[in-house]
Image (cartoon, rainbow, N blue to C red; front, side, top):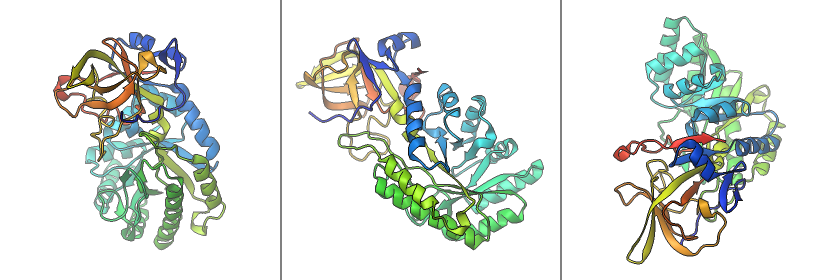
Length: 408
């Protein structure tokens, strides 16, 4: 048998059925109208933010990266928990505005911003994290045409990356941000235009579980921010230190030690260089805030054997859970945490493969895992489904369509 990833703390069982916030998933499926279904726990979202607030320095603001999960009820829940929101498209700006989020609490990063997106963002008062000198010039021209003073920050491509990160966002040639050596000149250009200079966005990597690596990267980020501000001759109003906090997905993964990260950052804040004494700091987190608070449910529609192997065929699959299938940047496929939701906590009785309903061998949710026996009508649960699930997967592949979603 191949091991399964660790099921996050916070889930329970009622009469042998997986429960979310004290409600059986069978009842939630009935309420939602069927499967496949993403269920998000508001209690787990609040608990995660409470623990993070307790661990991080009081001076540090926490922003939510909308790309991780833009589900409207979840966004509305996050409004009371976080200090700001980070978006990566005009579409996400429309989503946050629809959720009632103040655009002045929103920053917009990402390469390839179109003029129409820049115009809407500037008009709304969103802070643009500029990714290039060309993007800056387009922003100046659009703001001048609108007669609006734009809120402009610079996304820096640092000379370092986050060691051990699942996805490296800095260091060397990148489509993200302005190379550090060119940043001071761009900052001076921004200030010369009369724009509202909002600071730096420095994001070196994502999905890291090594506290030491995050601590080192944050120290490098602070040093870089101070040096660039000095070279630009500018006061630095704000610095987004990025994120990179990971969650355990796979067998052997251990949770990130946020207490160690927070203590180290607190010590750094107590000894800041002069250029950063009055700077406001934030981090932006996506999967760390919402990933473990979600579970994906699918119904077993067929049980079959092939060459001695058991296959539990579900009505879900990679079209909703691309990452769990191993097709979202994973080099070697490993099992996400998963279970038979209608026999939750029961001992393993057999080795089984959980697969989806698509006509491709890539559609696998669990390989040769140990599970209690499941039959047609049972529910399968795939955990760590709160981030990069519903909107990061090809829902329209083979005409399958999107999954249902619910916040409890």
